[in-house]
Image 1: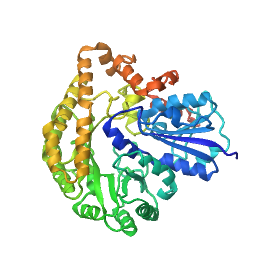
Image 2: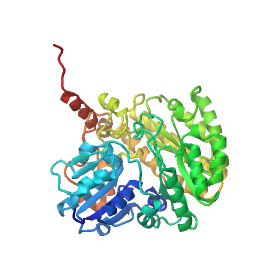
Image 3: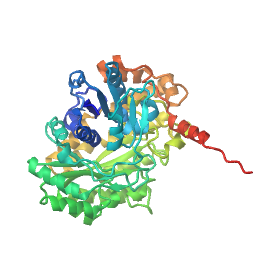
Length: 517
């Protein structure tokens, strides 16, 4: 096997940005798998150049011209950027590989623009490509290991890729770690819902934390587990074996069901300062919040009480909501969320739009079968910029009117001041204020709402009656991509939003038919 020059690009954002919050936080959004791929490539004997794109780098100078193989990790929001870069490097003779959430969610579309598209990936899959990385044109090869890897290189092995990435963050620097794959919950909208829960080696966690404590003066760790703490005692024991209490600060995403007061005391003791529990809905997903017997305002009060309890132990808490779910109807879900904001003023409320990411979640087949999925370009599929699912119980203008009203309330001066007063610690205060004042979502959603009411072409697009991309969205893509717009491959702005459903139908047709005789 010849020694290859491999460039690995971790796209944490879709394009150039000047946002203050992006400057502070984008380096902390780096993914773990591109770093893992870097370690595996070097172990296989190849030369690696690693770039984490945060929106402030010049990609034309960061990426090496003398690249044999380009490997890109991307979320769907960065897919067009990935497609453009792949187009450029294929024209220079490089073989290109795509991995990450977009490759898993939209493999059919990705194969039009990359030589190899990876689902679940392990070292054996990577080696099978790098042994003879031949171009695959016009349609790329789709490869999948069948399951998540059972072991990943630890922080020490990934450090040469971690260190230059977190160095880009001016103040808050978070080291990415992971202790488990998949999730035991089955939220129908989540990419991890169908992935079997699999803990990784807890001994590796202890070793990684000892390395960090010896390497950094004040380490901070961001856990990338889909739901941290499922095996709670094992995690705590791994941390407690590694370092004295408080030597390292931690932040994680977890469910309310795991955050009992007993567990919160232990989390505070070992050094947790940030927690991001999912509430999602006031009418669904109750197993995650331990509220199976209550709903509506009763659930709001119960959840707010628990969130306030969490804030007593953990200074920064972000609670996550999904707007537009099929269980929502009328103004009640939005008014309940306002009531929650008043009852738990110290928690930062984060709002996502109900989004269908290709084949990422079990319910997507039903949404596509019902004709409710819109062909929004990938640039807008970040759960914030656009909702590509036609609401079940709302007209579009009604939904956006409620969303604008809620977000304006959540980030109003009065709400921000109450949040500031309820927060403890300069980091939590600074994060919450910066995020609130730098957000442009109210203005953007208000623009969409106004156009829905007076622009028939935009309204027809949202209703699924037209595939003609409205000028509002086309201009945003051009602006965001900047120079990459000129090298975007033909057809990249459009995709088959029902590809998952059609692939299932094709598979059914290919099944052999048994005849009784």
